[in-house]
Image (tube, rainbow, N blue to C red; front, side):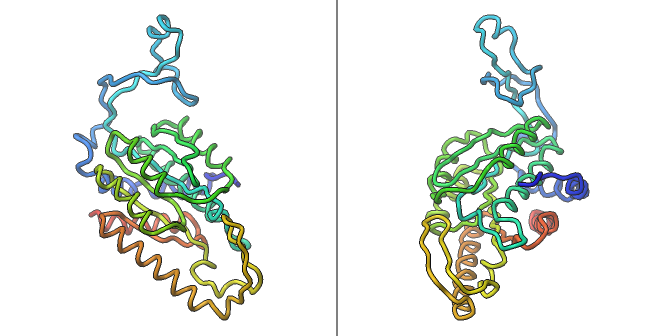
Length: 296
């Protein structure tokens, strides 16, 4: 995968700061006691040292007693504490010729969001999953942490099937503090199971956003040439002429997306379908502006 945050893309993202700041404030209203007052200095607990942690936060007195590197954690009152859940299953590896795969496009979208959050001193973490939760990096708000997140994104290869509901339930049960959860997935899974998993976060008071990257050929099946088509997860193959079935397939996809959007909005979950045929920067800006208007 090409570098996710090129200098050109970072330049574009800097112009989104004011928009993003307003959006973030809308996301977290009421989630924290004092969300706009920076960081408190009240000690909370220790945790094991992890790669990317700043050495100055090591408790050296504890190390002298136990010979273990432990980080002193504090109660952070940041604008936002966010977990980005990125679908890394095989279906996300699909991409039309000349376009990024859904995973590469979604990973770039995740990288942009991470950059904006860290730039605003927000804490962001990453979850990569397919049938199971494969990687979990807890939220932090440092530049070193951002580099660690980007390295994980750039090294991932889409594979495996999809069991999104199980991953969502596992994550919801593990989160002890309310915050923001962003799911980036093509959502090619059982609709009712998806909604059950997402509702778990809402029941615990989290703000939830679902971003669905879809390839232009998935939104308009008639763009494809005839031939054999293979399911990237099951391996099942079939022959079809898209010209003959495009209308029916497009109607089914549109109905699926419409139903998901309706059910998500009914649960207070923000939802957007994004075409991978567009530049990530343009799609993100359009979404942020739309979200700002809704939040405002």
